[in-house]
Amino acid sequence: MNIAVIGGHVCSPDIARIAEEAGKGIAELGATLVCGGLSGVMEASCRGAKSAGGKTIGILPGHDKAAANRYVDIPIATGLGYMRNNLVIKNADIVIAIDGKEGTLSEIAFALQMKKPILGIKTWDIPGIIKVKDAQEAIARIKQRG
Amino acid sequence: MNIAVIGGHVCSPDIARIAEEAGKGIAELGATLVCGGLSGVMEASCRGAKSAGGKTIGILPGHDKAAANRYVDIPIATGLGYMRNNLVIKNADIVIAIDGKEGTLSEIAFALQMKKPILGIKTWDIPGIIKVKDAQEAIARIKQRG
Amino acid sequence: MNIAVIGGHVCSPDIARIAEEAGKGIAELGATLVCGGLSGVMEASCRGAKSAGGKTIGILPGHDKAAANRYVDIPIATGLGYMRNNLVIKNADIVIAIDGKEGTLSEIAFALQMKKPILGIKTWDIPGIIKVKDAQEAIARIKQRG
Amino acid sequence: MNIAVIGGHVCSPDIARIAEEAGKGIAELGATLVCGGLSGVMEASCRGAKSAGGKTIGILPGHDKAAANRYVDIPIATGLGYMRNNLVIKNADIVIAIDGKEGTLSEIAFALQMKKPILGIKTWDIPGIIKVKDAQEAIARIKQRG
Image (cartoon, rainbow over all chains, first blue to last red; front, side, top):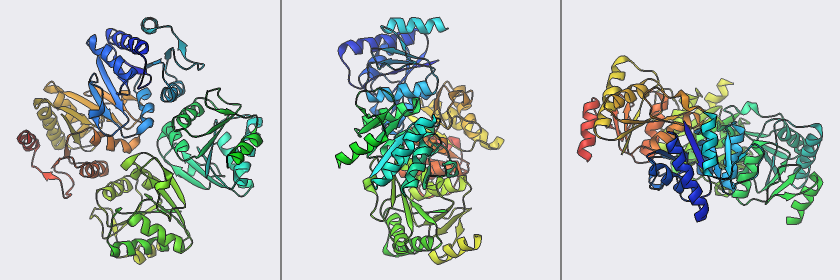
């Protein structure tokens, strides 16, 4: 199972902590973390996943796989710019949105369009998002789904 | 100048009337209408533009340019699926959002990301959208911008 | 009918003359010219088409429609880089290849894959290309096809 | 290091054997195999890589990661159709082309465009390809490069 973590490339320390916990929880579920491969929420979630021995995929906007953050195991360069947001969602079975701005909003839109379950922590208030208060609750909800 | 009209491929007669008026207004401004090239709001806006002698571009999700609605002058096949939403916005100088669901939300997100002015009529309530009540007000606002 | 002209963004004066004649011939056939929108063969063919009152579409690799050459009527920005080569072919009913390097080779490959007729003037020697000696012969062949 | 193996989705048993040996050799070099994720040369090379404990990435044309052949460790769904050929090359440091038709030709073109070393076994005769007679020679050449 692939779980995407989406959120901004810049974030506060509090948001980074949530993203890191989400990544750790994903690894502990035995799932693969998929993200956009860059900084901020993406990097924090990958760091969390690696701290628990997980596997991380970073689907990058640019042409060079070397642009991935250091916690990405499998960087995928696309050269698609923000269209790569669609690929992040396409490769996820479940999506966790944490904070985020317009880029994250486009990913939320694509997740709703592809009818993928999407859990939201301190993010856009869009109907269809399952609101949770923190990473622990997001992971607990995913565990319940089985 | 290119003005995009975005909205669902299925819509009510009321929404279609608004889309048609927006298309007509765009043509009267001397601008080119850009849209996703299919049915619903896209088709109604193209019909409006053509009724006033305007020019219409339809950027299609599929591989076949013959899939465009009959009011599209310049169909562009992309084979990009919903990623083509990004191209609709990329080719617009100003965006008018009318009604719409998740696809429209992804276009709104891309418009905000690319910092393009976006006017909204009965659509998603997202910060950054300039809310207007109808097509006439949208066109009047665009005229004011010069 | 859309006819693509493909070839390099840099070319000799002789190749530019052929491209210009091809563009003129396309316009005289009443067809729309599709190309990659930039310099070299693309610009020369657009100039030829406009000299005969034709219509030109330029499908651009970058994010900005202003990058098109001055003879493009309908610039389409894609942000797809060289992947836009696929869109040039997708939007053509017939392809004319003139000279060209690796980018042109990728377009020839896509044309063969999509089973679109492809006429070649002083270009790659690939089975499936209909070799012609100049623009006049290319246009004559297209006229014969009806 | 990522090494792409490119070739047709249908191939003869002889070509499949070469692809399998190439995949095995890539794994023995400690490199990751990147391919288009489907059948034919792609599947045979992945099978070879897995037989030697290697890692395999399949960059798929469709929307569903479940479409990958059974020897792909990391399937990446793109929904880009044949444009995904560009992503296969973008994610490779070195390319091995084996047999193949128009799809493979487009990948060869992109490899030349991106100036990536490309070794060819019984494939298109295009200047810039380093011709080798079999998988062993391809792997030996890559080892020499260091």
